[in-house]
Length: 119
Image: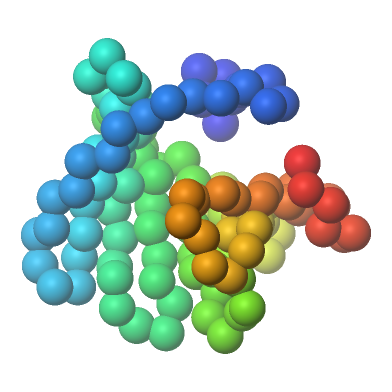
């Protein structure tokens, strides 16, 4: 992944998400920083057994694929390199910290974190 998308641990980034619904099955989001500068785009399907989103750079190159896990207690997404969903390309898991949330809070677990300790 390009270094311009990497952040140091615990470095916060405020973003704005703009949603563009194309059809009932397909969605597109544009993510920008607080100054309106493009950060990345998200495209994906919204129905099916596994919702899937692909995060794209400004040239529409795939950076990460997010695949939602179903039948879990917390909302959970697995992240993979580029457009892969192969286990060898698994990067990290994102999950909600509690079942019911007033404010969205997520925990991230790196692929090599077998104990599932929040990072």
